[in-house]
Length: 447
Image (cartoon, one colour):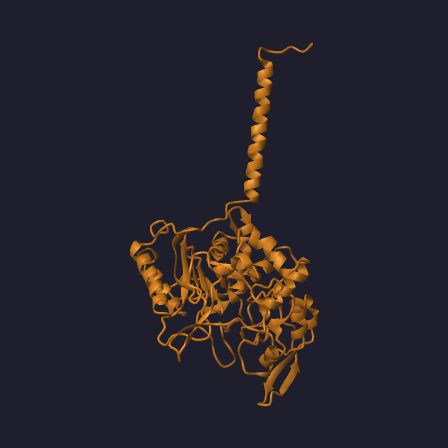
């Protein structure tokens, strides 16, 4: 016979209520882990919260505003963060002069080569899975590149003298731009002319891109020089092949969604058209900023079928890129989302160019003192030699339309400058990158 204590049915009811409450709490916690608040950063925390003097941030904001008012650029958004706090997040000028659209904090920008570190992170995620190693030959993953030749000289008619590879370029060389590939963005030589003639960067997809460049010779034997190249677009192709996913899908699933980078993609949604900043150049004849027209030989930024270029295809916002950079500062995670390990970040921000070879170094030029290259961005490994006030190991890169960032790991600090300027600057235009660095590092807290 079952004996009940007085009011045992009430005790049982309360027990089940407690169990149910715990279940709901656990469910909510799990849901929050899946759908963390990714709204940060929306505004500045202020100079003091980030450890800066108010005077420093006032000077910094005033300097950026003057750059815009002087018409060096049509508009700008800038952000400075330290120790996880936003010292300043501000904007000035116009996103579109002709359409009378002010530059807002949520403006969208063509970040061009600031796409490259995103591709590097994707590849490092696959490295953590053991799918490739730094000393692997590139041809292990792209067999179409196994039989490349190397241009040793050429004449004015564009005729080349070619020699075989002495060895296959490695993944490390692909990551630090010393593999020997051309690009077609510059260079008046037969190799870069072939990139332009074949419209490699206007390929329909990454498979088509590889087909177009597969027999273009290298500019030098692997490891001999540093040359800014198509290497990161090849990396995007490798991500596709190793992951089994379309490159853009991999970035969405593994980086953008976990980090809450909802504005970052290879194309712009039609609903976001009014947020998309126009690109301007200084016209010396008319003595004013003129809007650049979109290239007729490339798909529109509103075309979802655009080439998913790992070297320069992304559009992003300051908010999104700040979350990406904060992930680096945090050792590979943000808001509970682990993207890569601290070990991978350490590997990315170490100079991997061979001894004596520096950033932009060639067989006739020593390159930029104190600066080398890691995984898809430059590294200041010797600030004194580089004549930089930034901390040792500061890593950085920029985009073709003027966007730029840097991360100083010594001070847990980063900067993002977002502009859209390409094709010519106002005579006497300010060096906005140096101005920002000079003002920031003059702050007493950093000395």
